Amino acid sequence: MAEILKERSELDPQFQWDLTPMFESDAAWETALENLDAEIDSVAAFAGKLSDAITIGAYLDATTELNRKVEQLYCYASMRHDEDTRGEAAQSMYARINSKYVKLITALSFAQPEILALPEETLTAIVNDPAVADYKFNLEDLLRSKPHTLSKAEEKLLASFGEVMQAPSEAYHNLEDADLVFDPAKNAEGEEVEVTGSNFVPIEMGTDRVLRENAFRSFYKGYRQHINTMAATYAGAVKAATAEARARHYESSRAMSMAGENVPVEVYDNLVATVRKHMPAMHRYVRLRKKMLGVDELHFYDVYAPLVGDLKKSYTYETAQQMVLKAVAPLGEDYQKDVQKAYNEGWIDVYPNRGKRGGAYSGGCYDSNPYILLNFSGTLDSVSTLAHEMGHTMHSWRSRKHQPPQYADYTLFVAEVASTVNENLLIEQLLQNENDPQTRLYLLNQYLENFKGTVYRQTMFAEFEREAHAMVERGEALNASALNALYKRLVIDYFGDDMVIDDEIQYEWARIPHFYRPFYVYKYATGYSTAVALSEGILKEGEPAVKRYKEFLSMGGSAYPLDELRHAGVDLATPAPVDAALEKFERILDDAEATLAKLQ
Image (cartoon, rainbow, N blue to C red; front, side):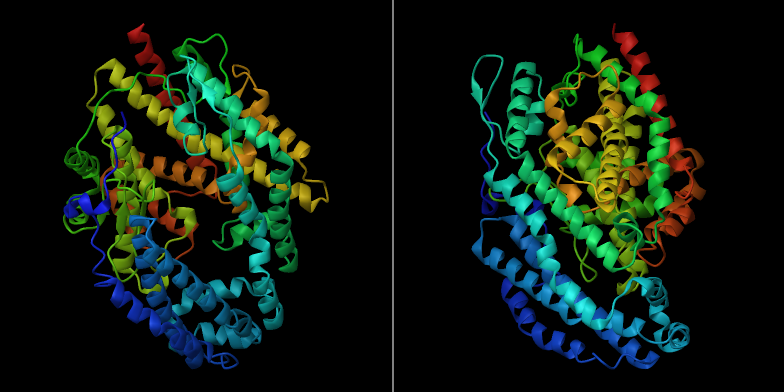
């Protein structure tokens, strides 16, 4: 029987985060919010005056401080909301600060086009003026967007279409979260089991193959019944992105999406080409999965099934803390001390409670310590999640300590690197000390699954996005049949001849919400490949690699992400890091096959 969740008030406060460093109380938050409108109006008063370095410097100082305040208000309200999503007071706080954030973005929309409307020689002189020295990288980055920035009136008009352009995404999420229902599925005992969006993957990860198959058929039947609507919402989202790219004079929506982080499209194309080069290893893993499951035919309802029986091991939170501390030992005592600080000083909200947001994340703001939300359940996956979120947290902690607020936030391109380095250090540490073949095979399979899910699967998604957007840019119809055919073709390429291509799998694209955030998924694959390269370097090279890595963690957003990663020792402008990561995948596969042979 599943354990009944307790109310938050019933849990030990020592396992809950302490938000008082941000605001002593909700009342203090309300007081800070009261002054926000006047401060936004004050900064908006710079409109029409941004023509010299001193005024621009003053404007950037004012917006930096205002953004810090809004960020702190937002983080506190968001985290209070996540403690118990049923609470009306926190819901109200979260809604109101979201509204203020929209007001802030709208009020400041004048600045970029106003600055970029200045003559080229004036802009060059301003960028090199000591009055804006603290913002030189920001301004140089801004200058890159000059060819793609419209007039002040056009930018305001485009900003006003923001909600309209988000409408396809909102329609999709409403359909998926609220309106999509699935038939119940029968398990091996003939009992009916409810199928929902939230329990589908856990069912598919279970050992009851009858239930997995029936849930799989039910789940995709639900998507098939709405596939034309979902094709229309996705086509709308793609058309919104391609229309904005045309308006901003980019060669494609992909180029526009990647320009923000100054990542050339060659990085994307290198990823796809390199993963395709290593496709035989993916097909080999599919064969290994088929062999380990002992099935005559491998179906898509088998791709998440456990290959090794559950370890039945349970870890206390205190044990998990020590496991993570031991795993990050190669990063040095100073890194371990910061991890211990997170444990000791109320940075982590550990256990689930009724109404608490699911999943896990690392949050916080410039003027607070980082915070971690967990829903710790004692599994090895929970331990790995703690390691993962601690990686994000240490990245944020070091960035905020070493960078001013305007450079403290690292970009999404590098956001998953530190978290995955920690995960890899944990699994490498566990493998190093594990001689039991059954347990070792379990760990190796976890490692292989991480590669499959993060490098191969996300690259397949990246190919799908690249082609879907290109179809619209070529004037082709993006309807259900075209999307289904595209996705099915990619699935056949990626999974190979040992996988039965179930008819239902062609609809899987419709359940991937990341597609409504164009050209985001490829960063999972590049980030994971980078993390593999870095963790291998840390374990094999030692101190020089650790030094470069910790310097990378301290850089925040003070340089372009590819330059930051080069500093750490990884050059994603070449195929080498992805090549090396997938060669590591092949070595893990070798180990898994040899370990399996010992058990047979």
